[in-house]
Length: 242
Image 1 (tube, one colour):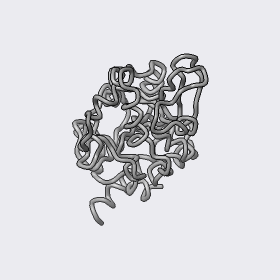
Image 2 (cartoon, helix red, strand yellow):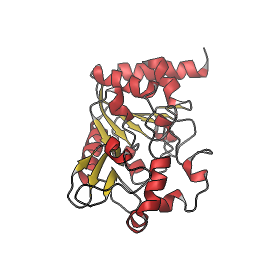
Image 3 (tube, one colour):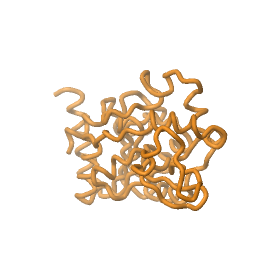
Image 4 (cartoon, rainbow, N blue to C red):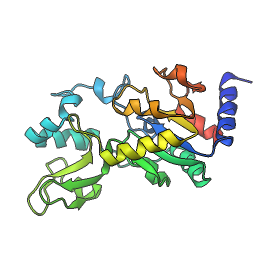
């Protein structure tokens, strides 16, 4: 029996013996849906632009350079052809079975909901939601795309801002509260597709009181705290257990 097979069997056993599972995920969950992450070799942070992504995706830059912001945003942050992969589908199945109680995600692509998951806490917001800064009117992603690559303007004349958390902006208070409550109450926290380097989101896993599993291609600073660490692509792992 290979090491990977042993790890999968251990994970299956942990899931079978758990009644309140929470999943905490990052960019690695969506890379298998062909959405690039930010910090890998081929990620957005290693591509060259006039400004770095950290600067472009900041609140200050959005306010001062909306045209440049949206040119980048439409080109590099929206992936309309992306579909849920085995990880998204596997998590939905666990929720349907009544075992998975919540998903806490750092991703903004909405793929968990597309797969069918209902209890999703989006720490960094979602590209699917957009609001006029002047009147507060909601606009869908399709509404926004009608303006690409230019600045989207509401019928009232205000700029439409994606409901995503930019650098310099705070996380939503209710989302934080709900996420921490779910993590602190679960008997099994599955952490997947994240290097746990993005704060404050990464600190949330410290609130876990139950068992912890980490599924990530590279090591993390929290590996020593986990009952099980699987250094494999998360989609491949979920295709085996679900």
